[in-house]
Length: 141
Image (cartoon, rainbow, N blue to C red; front, top):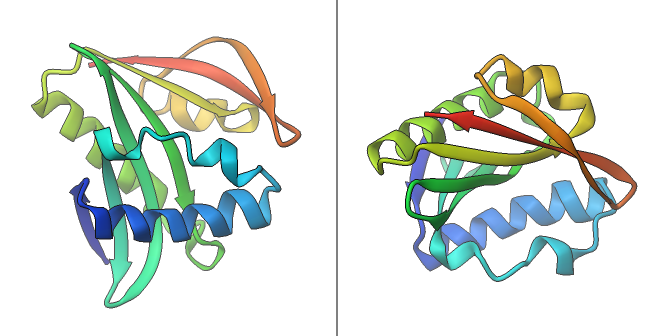
């Protein structure tokens, strides 16, 4: 598997294809909520195997020293193989290189303990999107 981090249009287009499959088709989240206009000013990690798309996630730089990790999506065939863990670690390393001090994430409630393993701390319950309760968590770099 190959991991690429960047924000060029072709990478973002491929990330959108993965997110559409996972969020819109599988989870029933309206595509308009996924396409929030922030992709161009975020770093994306794209995981591929040859030409095959596998997974994506993004890190949006909100302000100096502060970023939001979001849009973490792994195609169903590749779930349970540690792909998401490698993506999260890659984005955490990327954030540290950019002198980010705090990373926020709005995760599915059932993933709380998963993100706590990386050092994210639960802050509060937030919105429900597409029938999925999200929680806010923060990571101090």
